[in-house]
Image (tube, rainbow, N blue to C red; front, side, top):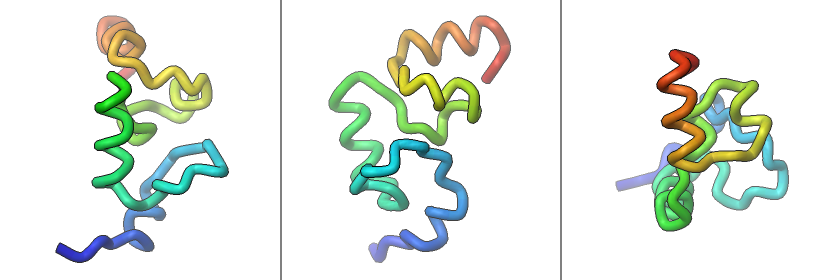
Length: 67
C-alpha cells in the first residue's frame, strides 16, 4: 500500500511542528497507540492544542459531548 502523505496532510490537525509522522497516518497511529494515546485527528482543535492525547482525556471529552 502506498502512503498518501500529501492528501493526509490536508486533513492533519497536528500542531506539533517537529513531528516526523505528520501525514503518515500508519506511523502516527502506531506511535500514539503504543503510548496509550490517540492521534491529533481524533480531537477538536481546542482539545488537540493541549497536547493531552491520552485515552482518559478523550473519554472525558466524549462524556462532555465535545467529541
